[in-house]
Image 1: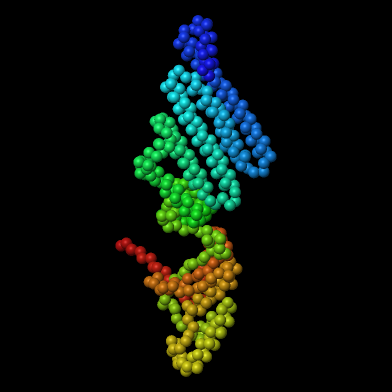
Image 2 (image 1 turned 120 degrees about the vertical axis):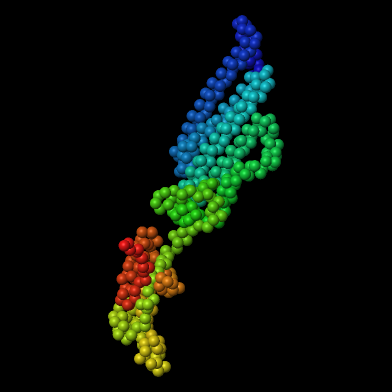
Length: 414
């Protein structure tokens, strides 16, 4: 390069240009010429590499090459040769200007770092999109891992740039960062916490994309649509979006409904309060009346015979109904609801079915239904519950029971 500059200077000097003007003009001419040459080479290489990638993409069965084309990865690869030529040729134009030569080299290196970061960004974006098309990675926090690599790339690029500007070797600069590690940890606290949380979430399989989660602290109740390094996005059932810090998944309590979705049924656990003063023993007339309910007629007859046998053997005085063993309206009602649920077409018969009493309270005696619906879809699930409790509420009167309701007091105005 030095010989070419000198030849141009001699030519310009022979044309009558002063020495200093000839030198500056020679450098300018070569600089512009090299820039044009490198631009043409860059243009040609980009065309060639893109054409090669396009042919490969057309013949290939995978979508990865198409994704790389869409993210301009071939263009980033094509910039390698023009950059090397620029770094090798341009600074040598200023062989007589040491400071300008160093400045040009550093500037080109910094531009090279920026181009490298941009190229790696395109590659990582391509990988992110491709990984999300793979079935075994669809529910994994791919965004978090890609962001971790991208942060590492950006930090390395920034540190390399600072090292070039300061004139310190990259390794010495990195070694010196130990003294300011506390500041780095403070600045990147959320990123570090998010990174650690992403790893734990993935390893422990706590949350996947598509999971239904409930997170009361953040008002989230819906499907996870995105997991990245810093946040988890949940699309609530009213179509609003709630953003949750990733590290909150390991520091706070939330509910993941995946287990329900993967099971054979969705739990029904709801109770009805019965007025306790309506609960009583059944007389023989009551038994005859209730035995006409087909669903429990066999049960009533069988239990009546067992109770009568017991009372007769023990010479129980039945002039008072309280004496001996008796059927109660609440017990028969509980058995009726259990039989009703057992024959209900929407209930999973292979999972637990139970109708039980809960702790009595000022609101009455709760009778709780505990079972599992075969259909787990929300709308259908709510319909099944409503169907069961419609029947339960309507059947209470047939057993001479009353539903306990909290009275509403109104203030009269005079």
